[in-house]
Structure formats: structure tokens, C-alpha cells
Length: 506
Ligand code: AMP
Image (cartoon, rainbow, N blue to C red; front, side):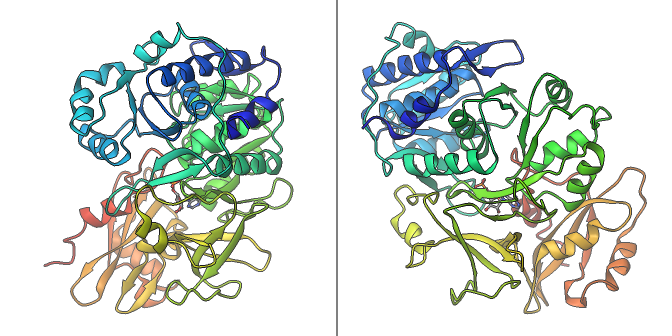
């Protein structure tokens, strides 16, 4: 049996001439190039002593060669370990020390800085990979054969470790198997009706599950093509929509930024068949505005690093603003009381738990942490709070740890945020709990106003008084120009809690 996931990709590949990647500079990589290039790198890795099961840690900029490196790891039986390009040397030291990779691949410009960091934790093999077909890895791999015998891997063997963003405590390495990735990608190809005619606009980073697995594995298993952009670029994305693109996958920020572009019209998006959003909540208002401007209804889905994709709005049928749709085929989702683990009736808010072939194998070298996040019957406790409505649509209320407990009452931030966002003049908001001597936590709203709007704190609180129970009302409203977000578009609530931590200490 050859490398499980790569074998599936190779068996479903279209003709070798078919273009897989096109970059804005006009570089084109065909499926044949991908096969040959990944074989060369796999041979190179093996020549450097990479054995099946060894980790290959990678902190490089997005490029077609980085994609080949990912596939090469699958073929060599290695475990691909991508790292956010924003990580500092101190963070890299932690990841390398924790994952003990056989090889670390970094950007050519970082080699000098990161080699001593790697060797400090015993990683002696450092290679480089740049965005201009440069770097020691790619240069040395050129001399290697374009044929390789893929290392045998089964569904349960590890394909990748992705560290979770870890807003509290140490970042954890989620272990994903070949079977996890393959099953989820096959499901998504079907559910979202991908075919070899699809051309995806890919502007997401490839160190995260969204850009790496949801976007790329799905496309690879459908034999489609992609425009490969280094980052979000509304001008270019709109041009590409006119050049034969059919699908875009993005985080909510992609949609708000495109909505701010006057070029976004029905005409501009007429070759598109599907817009998908995930990784962070898409405001219902954004969903509606998008439909009004383009005639397309955004398909929102929900997943996480540990589980791949769990739920999705339907391809046919209602794509409900503010909901993340139905459990994907083969995935079980239930809502439980976080304390008692009892399953809750429809409509009640509780912990989202999932089970299925998509769910990871556990956290790297953290057996106790892994055990504490699974129920005895195999369900994974996601840490997301949500509910399932009468029609079976799942919606997310927020992260468990973002729940505000004030004077003994639970306040779900989204409920307050939704009311604030509906006030005329408000662009968006984030509600957090901040230490408060009397209440334990004080409900605190951080608000971004629309341009030229002139609302003040008092006006917002009095407008909410008629809509929300008293205990849910923000004790303070703070105005900012923008909310802190990471590259995946997630609002950094931990940062807000830190920034305003002293607000009630007077
Ligand atoms: P990550 O592991 O970085 O992909 O983050 C996963 C987390 O992102 C989930 O546990 C959710 O809290 C959040 N998330 C992903 N998709 C959505 C969505 N469509 N709506 C709301 N939150 C989402």
C-alpha cells in the first residue's frame, strides 16, 4: 500500500498537463510538475535521513514549492509540521523543542537567525526554501530523481501536526492522520460539488488548516486549478473572478474587505459558483449585504484544526446567515451540558461535541490533555458553545472560555454583540468579561463605529436597555478604530481582556 493520502491524490489526478497552480507572476505548475517536484523533494528528504514518522518542521512563505514540500512529506512518510510565518525565534524554539523534527525548513532570510535556535534544541538539520524557486532545499532537490517509491502509509499514520493558536497556556500540536485528511477532503469534494472544472481563488495562508487542508486537499482531490495569491488582495481577486475563477474560500475579513470595494458587483462575480467562509464568525449582516451586492449566498462552514470540517450550510437549500449548517456526512455533532456531559434538547445552548473520521488522533506528547478533551464514547469536546435548531442547523455562540459570568449569571457575548451590531451607526463589536470587584466579571463592549457615525457610550447602553436583561448590559462601552484580529480573521478576545483588564479597578 503506498502513501495513503498521496495515493488518493495521484489516483484522482487529471492529465499531467493540467495546470494546478497559477501565481500572480505568471508561474504555472501542472499536475505533472507537482508529481515530479514532490518526488524530487521526497528523495531529497530521504537522502537527508528523514524516516517514516519523522517530523519536518516548516516556516516558509507561501509558494508553489512549499506545496510540493507538503506533498513530498506525505510521500516520504514524514509528518508535515507547518509553522505560522509570524512566529518569533523564541516561539520557534518552543515548537522545535517540542516536536523534535529531523529537518527544519525556513526562509533563506531567516537561516542565520534560526540555525542557532534550532541547534539549541537539538535540531541540526536546517534547510531553506524561498519564494523565488530558491533556497538550499529546492536547489539540492533539483539533482534528485523525479521518480520516487512512496513510503507505505495507512489511514491511521500521521500526516501532519498543526499547532493550535493556544490563546491560553502552551500551544498544542494536533496530530492529524492520513485518514483524517483524506476522509474530510473527499466529503467536502462531494458536499460542495467540486469538479476538475473548478478554479479556486486561494489567498489564505498555507500554515493553517483552512488554506492547507480545506482549500488545497479538496482541490487536489477534485483535479481543479487554483490562483495562488500570497495574501488577501481585493483588486486582484476581483480581476481573477473575471478570468475564470469559480470558487473562493475565505475568512470573514475577505468578505468585508471585498464589500468595501466598489468593483464588487453581480457582473464582476458572474463566473463564480460558490463563496465559502469559515474560521471565524461571519456577521449575518455581511452575509445579507453580499447577497444583495452579488446575488450569491455565502456558504458558511465550521471546523477547527483538531477536527477538520464538522458542519456546513447546504449546497442546495437555505444557507442561513449566522448558522454553520448541518453536520457533514459521517460526522456526528451533539450539544451537551459542559458540566454533566448530558446531551441537551434542540434549541438549548451547550458544548459542541463531535465524533467522526475527521477527528484528530490527539495532542502531540500530551496524553493527559488529550484524554481530558474526549468523552468516553469518543466525542471530542470542541470548546465551542452552540445550539442546534429545529431544522438541524448548528449555530455557534462563542468559545466556552469567552463566556462572561457576571453576578453569577451567564452572558453569551454573541447575544450582546448581535444587539449592538444592529444599532444604526455600529460597524461591529466584541463583548468580553473583565474582572470586576462586585460582579466577578463586568460585561464590557468594544465597539467600532461606521465612518461618520456619532454614537456615545450612554446612547448605546440606553438603546440596549429595552432589548437585553439588565445583567447582560455592558457596564462600559469602549470605542476603537478596529478590533484586534489574527490572520485568520479571529477577534483576539484574550488581547481585549488584557487591554481592559484594569477597567473596573478604581
Ligand atoms: P482553528 O483551529 O484556528 O481553525 O480555529 C477553530 C475555531 O474557530 C473553532 O473552534 C471556532 O471557535 C472558530 N470557527 C471556525 N469556523 C467558524 C465559523 N464558521 N463561525 C464561528 N466560529 C468559527
